[in-house]
Length: 448
Ligand SMILES: *[C@@H]1O[C@H](CO)[C@@H](O)[C@H](O)[C@H]1NC(C)=O
Ligand SMILES: *[C@@H]1O[C@H](CO)[C@@H](O)[C@H](O)[C@H]1NC(C)=O
Ligand SMILES: *[C@@H]1O[C@H](CO)[C@@H](O)[C@H](O)[C@H]1NC(C)=O
Ligand SMILES: *[C@@H]1O[C@H](CO)[C@@H](O)[C@H](O)[C@H]1NC(C)=O
Ligand SMILES: *[C@@H]1O[C@H](CO)[C@@H](O)[C@H](O)[C@H]1NC(C)=O
Ligand SMILES: *[C@@H]1O[C@H](CO)[C@@H](O)[C@H](O)[C@H]1NC(C)=O
Ligand SMILES: *[C@@H]1O[C@H](CO)[C@@H](O)[C@H](O)[C@H]1NC(C)=O
Ligand SMILES: *[C@@H]1O[C@H](CO)[C@@H](O)[C@H](O)[C@H]1NC(C)=O
Ligand SMILES: *[C@@H]1O[C@H](CO)[C@@H](O)[C@H](O)[C@H]1NC(C)=O
Image 1 (cartoon, rainbow, N blue to C red):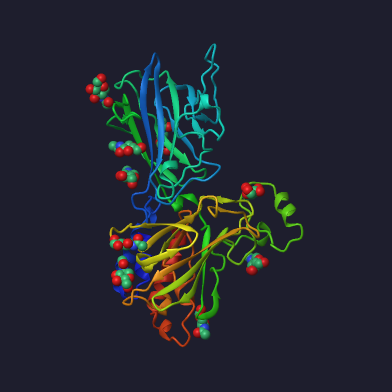
Image 2: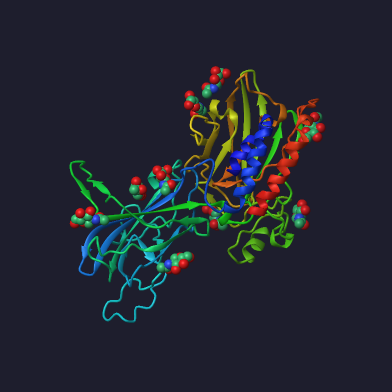
């Protein structure tokens, strides 16, 4: 909803529509914790439980988590999944995962269960786990790739052997209150629904087996739930104007400068290491964002134009593995060449492909290093001009929206974009649009 509104904003002729959307927006503001991402409307994480055998006091289930989100992944230290048992179930044993706490198993004589908690929390095992504790798709330290970037690694599984549970499909009670942390908040999971049993095609493709019973849980993400402040911002520049438009001041909040580290501090490394806790530690900047995306309109050819994109990490405590960008610009329907990034067109509105996902090349620049001399990645994009729409006026050459790792980046205000020399056109941007933009941004942070 919000995003759609912003995309209309960038077309000035849509002013009357703005009113309608502004009205709708103010109505939906307080329900905005409901997850909906305009650029990935069908994105979700699905948790599926397949009962593969009954045991004397329960069942063995394979739990599979599929990340169907186009561009949101779960990075280290990884996911954790929780639920509440419907009765007095216990987990006798697990493969490919473990609970974080065993809980009170004092009632059990002999071999105690793996976990006796009413509300267990499961985490993935680490890479290098002995083979006899692994199952397929496990043991990646909780890292889950996004669907567009690496569908084969967008899945995670573990196996649980449940005791003191129902032993037929009529007596089994599905667990309740599923939670998914990545590792912080952000995901909301719906109730488990019993669905037709999953069919498994054997590797020789000549036989199909099926689960004894299956239930699904769908979890969706909301940036509003995840954090109060933005995590990245956008700065702009162009060959036709010397002005570099910086990220908005305090785009990611303005904590006092004591919570950031000055890049010119002598013995920087030991200062950073000395501040020993695990919260992010950013370099002191006017925007205070951990990540900045810079869009530079670099060259103008007869048929083409060229952009340089630089992503800079200002966080001393974070390496971003498998980072990605989502960029919305009308010329992505004619992207001709891209250097040293991967590209996939996303088409959230059906046939309009003005949205692109960009990510690093494996083993080359898919790893965005912590803040410092190596803490950046860059690429150049070559677009073919469509004579009917192409212009350097009114900031058309700049992106409408940028996401870093699925989080919306704060853009400079439209009236600050670099101007074409002698172009008075910027002044045409009506006061109304600016006032609306300001109101919307206020609303955005009021809701967040
Ligand atoms: C979850 O995502 C998948 C893939 O995009 C989609 O087919 C499914 O309908 C979604 N489920 C829900 C409940 O939105
Ligand atoms: C339970 O199993 C019976 C056959 O044993 C089957 O007819 C029924 O559809 C199953 N119910 C569910 C919810 O899977
Ligand atoms: C599940 O969560 C809801 C709301 O947080 C709570 O009211 C309910 O008691 C919980 N159910 C169980 C079985 O814990
Ligand atoms: C259950 O989830 C799986 C993916 O984990 C999906 O393929 C399947 O379509 C889902 N079933 C239903 C009925 O939503
Ligand atoms: C923090 O430091 C940066 C650079 O040293 C400066 O530009 C910014 O204004 C300072 N912010 C605050 C809130 O003092
Ligand atoms: C980031 O990666 C580098 C090189 O792999 C490593 O030396 C450094 O400790 C990592 N930093 C963090 C915060 O994990
Ligand atoms: C954008 O979509 C059009 C039509 O759907 C297609 O012909 C074109 O190749 C797409 N462009 C890119 C860069 O994917
Ligand atoms: C791309 O550019 C060409 C040449 O200007 C134009 O004919 C075409 O409509 C543009 N769009 C797409 C989707 O190819
Ligand atoms: C460059 O753009 C800025 C707005 O960001 C404007 O104030 C300035 O006058 C422009 N410079 C020229 C030479 O047009």
